[in-house]
Structures are given as structure tokens and as C-alpha cells.
Amino acid sequence: MKNAFSPAASIDADLGVLAAASAVLPPGLRVFIAEDEAMLVWALTDIIEDFGGVVVGTASRVTEALTFVANKSFDIAILDGALADGAVDPVVEILAARKTPFVIASGSSSADLKYGACFAVHKPYTESDLKRAMLAALA
Image 1 (cartoon, rainbow, N blue to C red):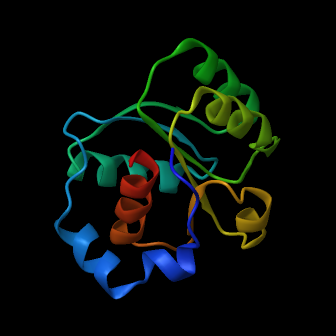
Image 2: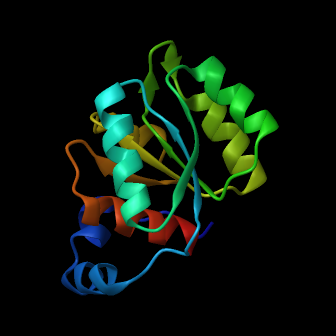
Image 3: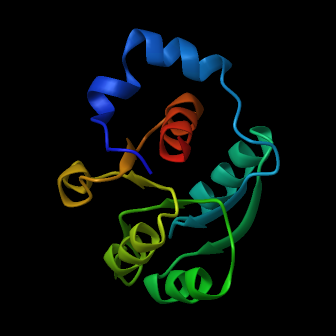
């Protein structure tokens, strides 16, 4: 994973928007989603499939996410900053230690400060926002 970027500066940069619109995620990309809002999980699953990827697992609680991360293989994770049973900090620590790419998708702007060394999108985000963050995390 390369150095973090500022979502406000990098994601919205004119050239970044144009490049991300035409960029393609790797086909068959295996994605893990940790999100406690069922509607968002369904929407993210559709988006990932539209991108040509596959959702290999989901978790709505940190305890579930930790079990999944410990036992399964995937290419990138999309994590809500706060799940039903708390902050995703322990999951982030494991992913960072393993150098597994991840994106924090949070409604809280404090997630940028807390998870400064990662890629983030703010709820509500667009498919393009998510794609740009995923591409950056995978770079």
C-alpha cells in the first residue's frame, strides 16, 4: 500500500476524476465488506459486481470481521469506521500489518484523522468515489 492521500485533495482532483472514470479494477477482485447497515451491504455488493469483482464475505460486527480476516483470503476490504459492536481499529491493524489494501467508508469525518494512513470515502459517496479509493488502495 502506498502513502495515504487526502480524499478531498486527491479524489476530487480533475485529472484523478477523469483517470478513475476510465480505469478498471482487476477482474475477479475479491472484496470483503465490513458494514453494519444491510442496505449499504446490498448496494456495495451490486457496485462491486458492476466493477467486475466478487464479494467474498461480509461482517456487521468487529468480532465477525476479525474472524473473517483471520480465516479467509481476499484482495481488498471496504470497512465502515464503526460497526455494531465498535470501531474497526483491530481489523485495520491486522490489515495494515499484512499490507492488505483497504478503504474506510465512513459517515464520520473523524475517520480521516483516526485512520490517517489509509484511503477513505465519506458517506454518502458515489460509485466513482469508491472506485477511485479502491484503485488508489490497490496501487
